[in-house]
Length: 110
Length: 118
Image (cartoon, rainbow over all chains, first blue to last red; front, side):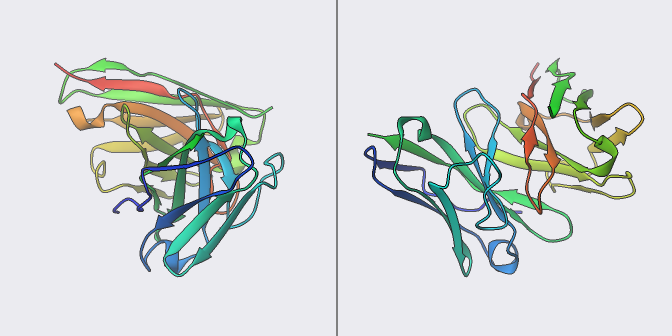
């Protein structure tokens, strides 16, 4: 149950795109199409942004998209806006009804 | 409107116990698996435990197995986390979350802070 690996930080200017990666193993990210992504603003609860690798819940802007290749999943935020500045966490099903989160990436809008 | 409201956090000494509650409303609680997720101060999210809809199956992170017990009362629309043998490293905000999409947590409570310290 080791945490998935994410870069500590990422940044982009308004209107640009930023991509966050989430690396796991064949026992979690690579083994299932069950990766989700969460946005967390300071002092707030996490918010689901992407589930099942690339599906967006209703209400989440289509600027947010997800993908996966092998043991690495990615979240791309296109057309960066000031309100996108937050911490982002990936999560994956890890088998036997257990789950694992990523280490988190702080996105800064320059 | 879906609401999850945690309670029961506080200051406890190492080795002590605490029971967290999560009151659910706005949805059919008995139809959903539920989870606890924690976040130490300034740190990332960590999955803690899961319980299925009829309480017939539970799973735990290795770090809490044997010390924490997840349960639910579907008649009271409430999720619980009994935490025993608490350690300093259990200090965190504890969130309850609804498992509303495949392998995803679609609604979260506001969290309750547990501080383990002498």
